[in-house]
Image (cartoon, rainbow, N blue to C red; front, side, top):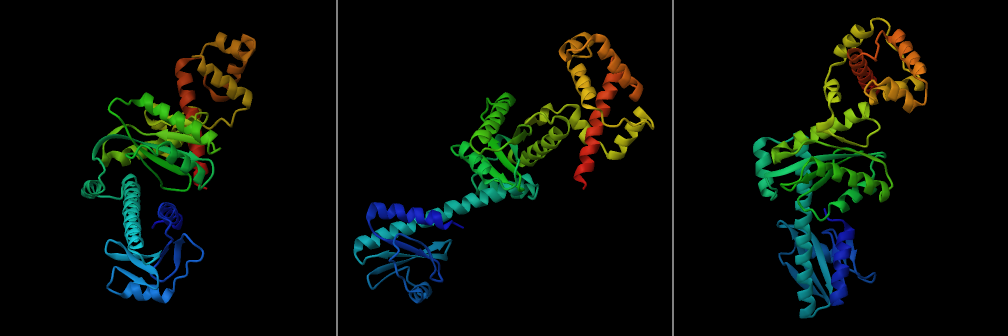
Length: 362
């Protein structure tokens, strides 16, 4: 469970303090970590000691110690020297390694618990029992952030996120697939959605500068109980998907700001096709050219104001009117009229949704 590097760092620090060489081996006699290349231990001696009832033993100038993980023999520690001081240092090392095993096991269990929690793999009674056992607060304000990286298995991004929130022991960072990092963040009583937006901006900026990767960040609604973490996760996941379809220019999307995009995202495709047929009949509009798209977007940004739109596009008013009339002929909708503009806006969002759904099916 514990990496060899962690074990190596631990005994290196002990040697720096005590000047006693230490070696950690598995029960088969294979060296896991050692402070000296000259440390020669007979594998048969390790096997013999592992099978013996003794917890420690001194043989030929070496002290042997057993390291247990919940009564199960995990490692054998060997300390070079036969004095009482070496024995004491060996016992200290055993205690430290066993504490590391406990700490890493708890960390793994928490990570496993959070993963199963967000994926709805636990019964309600299991959620409360395991949270209590792992000393995780049941009633606390939390929110789930989902961070999508550009590249799969981006370990730099994962480590950067862990570094940002390393001081917050009540926050959990995990992953459920190869591209998404999940942050379950515990909130203070006074923290609001404005604070969540600031946190999302910090994530985007830090990952861009330190991990050198582009990310999209989405987050769900604030929840008050541990059992609702999966709800906030599903909201964050939906926000990420909806953002890709309707708000591709944004790299931060909040579930509570999705608006009509959230409604369209939940529509079945047959209903979307029926709506498009009602609006356009058999004359479904093909994809518009860049000039038309820019004109439409700018017109909507300026609340259907022809004069302001023509000014921002640096075109004559009559030119803009001509473009809008051309659009009316091809679609049957005059977007200078509010009702038609609303229908057209929804129709274009539905088109984007249908294209997205078609792309993920292949």
